[in-house]
Length: 329
Image 1 (cartoon, helix red, strand yellow):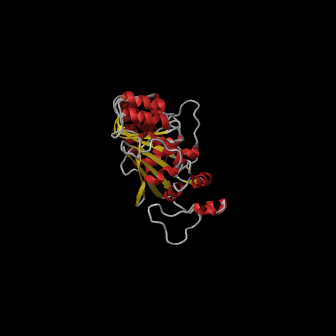
Image 2 (image 1 turned 135 degrees about the vertical axis):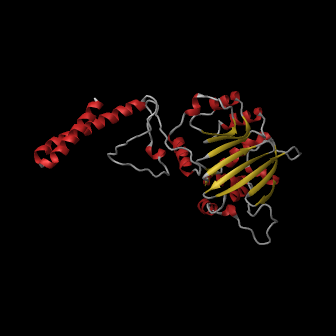
Image 3 (image 1 turned 30 degrees about the vertical axis):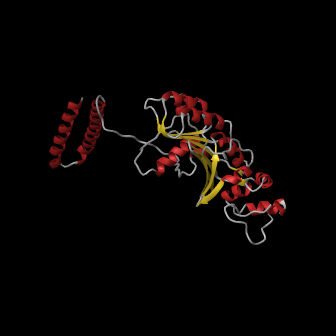
């Protein structure tokens, strides 16, 4: 088996005999390939696909986008993202089931920048394609994205039920709208261990027991968004834990700068309103009473130390302080 770009003519020079390589050199060569090259290589023969399944090319993320006329796979590697676009359509060439990547060979119709384009697939092949593609890669994050403005409710729920049986870390529902009944069904079906993102319109009064169930990673994601948000979202956030909950400090503060002050004392102050106003006046009077008592005590201590000329002035101040203190009592 020889390998060259599928959308080009047969090369004039002697081709590179890829399958003649031992497994270790084969693995080293494929490690330098991007995800689209891995996909094209797997379409050449089932034997090549088997070798690639053993090698498990590493991806950072894999996103599946589901619509009515097409489905798209985003394969993220470090800072680059390459895509595979599967177009649906009825024709004599239409494929109803896929068990190996070689079946895609005749339906590959080109590459546009970062997109591989493959056509003539029915809706029944969505999860066959996912199994074939995901088997080639090792990926810690896999998400399913449902475009509600392009999918009927029946089709969306059919895809959801199938995707729940697959390896998946996140579900996303975007565009369109969700009724309270349908959203409740989604919240009941999707485990709380999976990340759920709702980008569609939902009822403003919607409530569900799982809607406020967050772990430390969820809170960390919100905190990172809060810190980097250009808008003034909040000034203070208090978190209350359920009984028995344990904080994973590393997960909670991931990618955040935190400050810890030993022995800190916090003070809070606010403007007195309502009944608190009278309480504040009483506190002010008590403070003034204390000050007057201290001043009178100081005057009495100085009486034996002042000259005759200053004595009358000291007495006058003392009488004034006593009069003010009497009024406070």
